[in-house]
Image 1: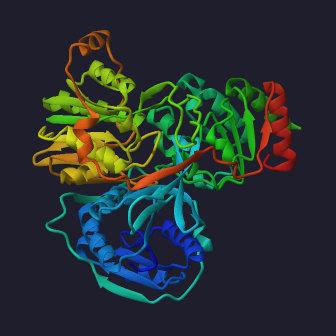
Image 2: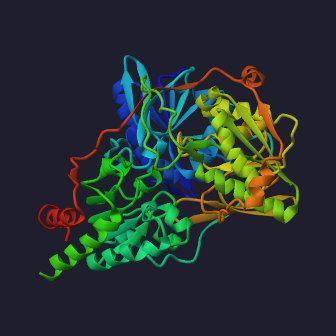
Image 3: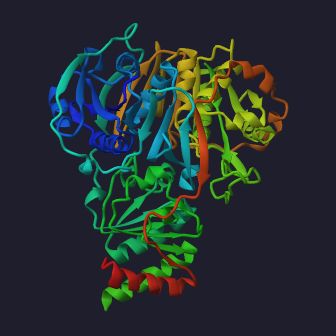
Length: 328
Length: 256
């Protein structure tokens, strides 16, 4: 067993996923507390340039894990390559960014190694030689400190936005190319091209003001409340996932992990409870106002202003006040 | 197609949750409902059966109260149900939940297993993927479209930030289903009546226990997370709250 933390970075079609740097920042923080060394592995094919980019962060090694089978992502090829690599390197801890790709293969990889994976960690604690990861539960209503029961290597995924990628310590790390091990046969899943649906018409990432609506709006016929407030503010309308699933707003207005990431000057959430999947898309807003009747709504944890009240009464009153303020 | 849908019972979305005395789990005296992504998985299973024939089996693991999610599934059109019935099933980690389910369906040979992409309580997003590993069959996650192809399935996967991908895979397979893949149906009165006569197989803890592994992760402590910001709280009558908020936005946040 080596005293190392292995970060498994992510790229798709030759483009490094920026959350790889957040995971490196998490590993560096844990390394400061534990004294373990940070190593980075990047699986893919023809990824020398991306490995060089990772080498700009402080670590002891960057491994470019190269294999033809890793050209287009499949869980079978990724599990085979990383299983062999981890068995060879024997790191104490393996960290992944909590991306859709990682969600697809990392649980299976952990089980193939007869280990476990703590998923979607927002932080860690290192107490008396014991490493705990903190994760949200019950849609963010509670946090849990979770420990590993079995032997290392321990494995965890780090929530997007939990650590600052731009604060990862810089360095000049040597890059080593390693030939990835193949699987027993051809991958069972055949992937096709990644694509976007019709070009997105709405770019919420540039909006200065966003009024976001969540499940608390209850019915489609209540949507004009939201529109009126957005109009009064001169802002765009966004939504949490259930609103778009219901077809009350087009998918392109969805904010969160599967939708857009926004950073307006002002975000007002109406009846948005604050599930993690939405929060990761909007917590960079400068001022966050949340209006919710539930005083324990998780969104209040990241809000600058928490309005605890019935949105059906507060929003019309707010719309009138804003009109007054704008005209004066 | 012989389809299995794995469903979890979770606390109702708006239910106020309280911690138990040890601070390790929630108190059980809340209202419960079907985990929303699992409801979409059930709907998708029923639609596939309606298109291609076959049968739909619904499975859950949890205490006696969890039978409610199976009764709902039967009322909506599932043909039979499997209930791993014991309080202890609700406390398993994702790996052992998958082992328990695999043991309960041994010999069934389902063509397709579907479940929600994650649960509203743990939110680990792992059980479906782990079930595939234990069964030794392929899987795909975050699926928002299923078509039966000549030699298996053609699937649409959701990726991040508005990207998608088509993939093909053979059956048997496990798929984790994204919310919004379809429109959920309601149970009909006739469906509710018929559900009472449909078979429900109970699986006891003793039948499964030997198939489980030691737990590899443990919740040491569950707690209400602290606020990450200095949050200004506004309460009281709507008109007053609106005035106070606009004052703040104008003068302190300078966001108007």
